[in-house]
Length: 390
Image 1: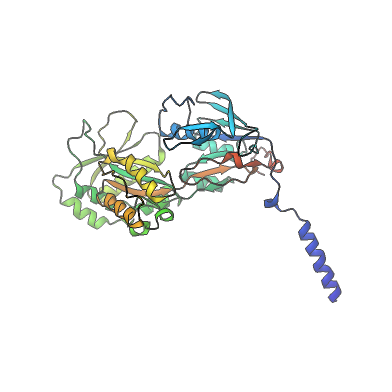
Image 2: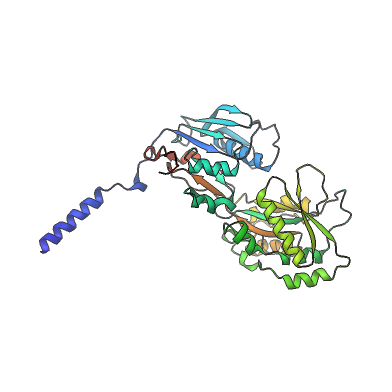
């Protein structure tokens, strides 16, 4: 009996050892990585300006693949992991692997980037295995996963904030009173934005840095206080009318702006959400803005945010001490938030959809670009059936 058990155990061990281990599969060279993006990049010439932030970000991602390094001023230089072989303005770009790249040849032979694909189209193409890699809006991540799309998330590193404009816009005669700014900040239900609009993809934000970076985000309240908000707004007579602008092409900003308008009305604040276009004169008193962290280091990330917000919100943009202590960082962050010129709302992760054949993908950190030179394509996973199921 004991001999039979020993023999069975030995046989089971041999069988388990012989089974293939997916994570231990040896990387293979070859194949074209299919990428889809929402932006339409009109030119890769550094001298040609981009039309909007989305195009600028997409251009930066492509540049990071065809150049080796990026200087502190944002300039790319040196021969990168890939080189450009075809480019159709606003439509398509094809990159080929650089055989003698100094860090080693990429695993994939080439990358084909299709531009101008809407979020829904990207999700459908991932579901049907028509593409290998695409960014997905955070608010669509849950729906994409439910439809069988393989989803990858970064740490939350993009801040969606409400900023009270401090410049001398022609149509605004005066800035919004501090009590009104505070009342509006207290009226906003961040938990509802995360739970319902973002489908729980994100975190409420009370400060200008996420908890994983600064370690002090928990010290900033994210709770709504509608009662106190109503008390503050009642002190302002006559009640001002606030126009909150949001990017006309951003469905998430629109949904958040409309939710804020509901919260504001419940607190007795007259607020209207209005779509605005870049470089077009408008009468907005405040704007929704997206701020993506450019560094994992809290001092550098905060200084970058201050530079971006300085002229817009009339906040003091003087640099932090060098080196900046955690207390220095917290005090500067607290001073900005307490002015209520910048009202942090939510932290968003970057969400990516991947096909089943993509291997060794790691989501980039704050300030990093897509590490597509490190991924490889598993021949065993391609192609999918017509229904998009593996």
